[in-house]
Image (cartoon, rainbow, N blue to C red; front, top):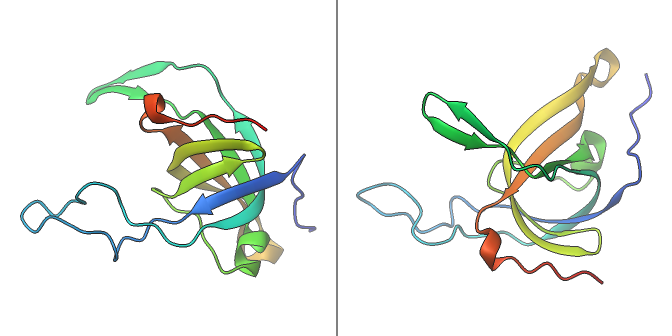
Length: 137
């Protein structure tokens, strides 16, 4: 089976979260201020924006859906020895400067000859929409 291709791929700039390098409060065991970040890298991805801001009622409270997702090929990530994980940050999507964070990662398109997933869906959301820099070039 051939490896899937991306439709209209654009460059995505990713900053990985550096969990071991993040200062953690000893009592509460949670990050203090911002998480530390690793060196940014750029990779091709297929972007899908979702503009509706629906809230989904659940037992634990309302849950806001993601703003969109980016599809990455696993073979491209493996070629540069990177992974996409929850908490990573997308600083640029194509020509748009962003400040959005990965909230969910879903492996997709499992093929037997590839020994598993060939695509990764990384759903993203902005954490502080009022502080975003949405410069377009």
